[in-house]
Image (cartoon, rainbow, N blue to C red; front, side):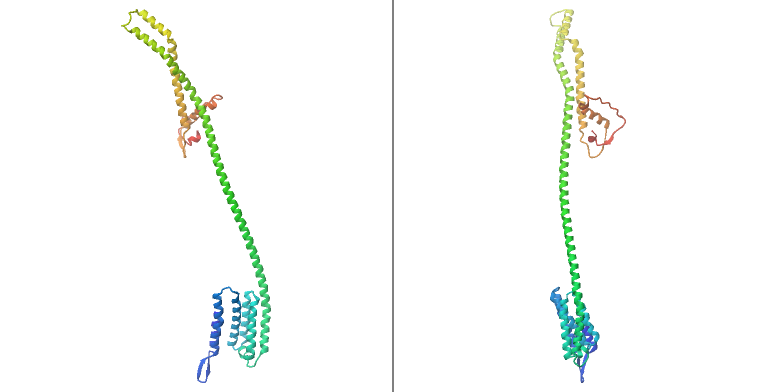
Length: 371
C-alpha cells in the first residue's frame, strides 16, 4: 500500500505535474488527487492492519482500497490499456487470501468505477472524450471472467488447505497421542524402575540380614566349639589344681613331722626312732605317689593353660576386623589359627596335616575374608 501511494505520486508528478491558465501556473488536480486519494487508500488499510491485525474486515478494506488504487493509476495514465492490467493483477493478489468472498467488493468497486467514469468522465478511464458505457460493460465482463477462475482457485485452494490442515491436525493429534502414550509408558517405566529399586534395596537388606544371621550362626557354632575346646583343658587344669590342693595337706604334714624331729628341744629320741617316725609319715601320706603325680599334674596344667592361651590368641587373630585395602599378612599363621578355631568341626572325623611354605613371607590379602 505504501509503495503504491509513492507510485501514484510519482506518476502524477511525471505525467501531469502542473497546469497553466494564462500566465498562472498551479499544481494539476492529478497531483492533488494522487496525494489525497492515494494517501486515503494507503492510510486506512495500514491503520486497520496495525490496529486490528488478523481481523476479517481488514481483507475487505484492503480489497476495496487495492482496486481503487487500480482506478487511480488508470486515471493518472489517461486510461492507457497497460494500466488496466493492474486490475487483473490486484484481483490475482487478493486471491492469495483463498477467500472468494473478498473478490466480490473488489469486482463491484471496479464495475461501478468504470461504469460511472465511462458515462461521466470517459477520458479518465478509456482515454476518449465520448461516453463509453459498453466498454465499461466489456471491461467488467473481463473482470468477471477472471473472477471465475480466481473463485475456482480459491475454492480448490481452500479445500486443499482444509485437507492439509485436517491432515496436520490429525497428525498433531496422533503425535500428541503418541507423546502422551510415551509419557505414560515412561512414567510407568519410572514407577516400575522405582519399585524395582525399592525391591532391590529390600532384597539387599534381607540378604544383609541373612548374611548377618549366617554370621551369627557361624559365630554361635564357633563359640560352641571354642567353648568345648577351652572347657577340656580348663577342666583338667581345674582337676589338677584340686588334686594339688587336696594333697598339699599331706605334704605339709610330712614337712611338719620332719621339722619336729629335727627340733633339739623336743623329747630325746634316737636317730633311728626319728627316722622311723618320718618314714611312717611318708608312707601314710603316700609320698611316692605324690612325688610322681604332682610334677605330672603341674605339667598338664601348664599344657592346658598354654592350650587355652593358644585358642584365645587364635580366636583374636581369626576375628581380625580386616581393612578396605589389602595388607601384608602371615597366611600360614592365619591358616593355623582358623584351623584351631574351627577344630571342633573336624577333629572327630578328620585329621588335618599342614604342608605350608615357611619361607613364603607376608602376602597382601584381605585377612578377614581370607580367614
